[in-house]
Amino acid sequence: MEKKPPLAQGQKLRLTVGGLGSSGEGIGSFEGFKVFVPFALPNEEVVCEIETVKKNYALARLLKIEEAAPDRREPLCPVYGLCGGCSLQHLSYEGQLEAKRQQVEAAFARLGHLTVQAEPTIACDDPWHYRNKMLFPAGEREGSLAIGCYQRGTHLVVDGAGCLIAERGNEEVLGAVRRWMELYNIPAYDEASGRGLIRHVMARCGRGEDDAGEVLAVLVTATSFLPREKELAEMLQKAVPHLVGAVQNINEARGNVILGRRQRLLWGKDSLTDRLGSLRFKISPASFFQVNRAQAEKLYALTAELAAPRPGSTVWDLYCGTGTISLYLAKKGAKVHGIEAVAAAIEDAERNAAANGCAAARFYCGDSAIEAPKLLAQGERPEAVVLDPPRAGCSPRVLATVVKAGPQRIVYVSCNPATLARDAALLSEQGYKLQKVQPLDMFPQTAHVETVALFLKQ
Image (cartoon, rainbow, N blue to C red; front, side, top):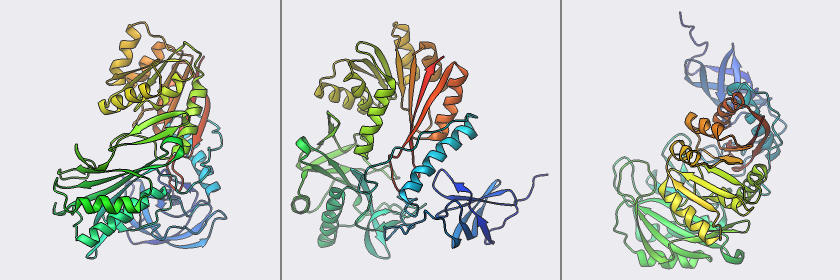
């Protein structure tokens, strides 16, 4: 007979928090039953109210902190807790770094059955104002225009300005669009009814040439008709000193996909320039580019260092995206084969390679599980393989092909410690020793952690 959960909805209880979950919530235990409490920290005594009871765990709302942790701090953002963007502003930055290191170690132990000692998390030099790209949803709240972020766990828009993790150019664009909408009574889009016009306000910020700074403004609309577009362009130019272009992206589809397939240039250019190290990249509205430039430079430099390519050696970069890691490897003299399933990303990768003089980087559009075996059949034997898969991790076929190729080094870049741990166990069973596990803080004030793992052939 299935055991009944020891908790009920609405029940209040006092808990000792033992750790943090993968989303940054505190984890306590009641009669051996896990209780997740957002905004609670390890080593705290809290009073909470049960909101949801599942088969193996419960979700609770924090009511009171009886004993606060030493590294608790007052969040700086006025809408923190309501906004769904950040989840760890109440934890000191040093505490965030340690929590992320522990999160990685726990994932390896729980899901990979591997005992690892992760390196200290690589910190962001400035854990604020790091995002070079922001997407602000537009809507109505209590009868007034709201542009800012989604409320945690919902699609209700929280109105806000002065986001503390966004680069300044994002806020300049948001402010100009807000004033334009209010002045000319431009309606926000309503997801439920499908009525209205403005769906999202997007801004991208780049370094530009010689660190001059560039900002691209993108307005996502529900129809192709855009009233007062001349006035919008003028207001953006006045409010955003480094504006290089304004674009209308048209998304007429219902649902929560943000960008549509059509766009119109309203003013200036439809792209901007950004740089990582010595490499230059042309960034269009839909291009993938790491939102934390400073940490991306550290991540890619570390990946290239661990791959240790020799001049003339062959390296595979699977799930290569727009080719940023591939170009770092090619700059070290390696012959690089990059594989990516998204055609637009491969087009960007080829343009980026040409713009940066990286003729040694070749790119293939397709599933790594299909294209990598083709390279192997052609006699391509890599000395190193870089894996940078999506959150779901590598497919078993990809891992099997990599093992068959027999590289001396495998460098695995992951945004999800759980699937990294799972795949690490498979590689360990196939003769690859886990040599190094390095967390990196790509998204300060959130629970997300990037991890780089090095495997050596035994």
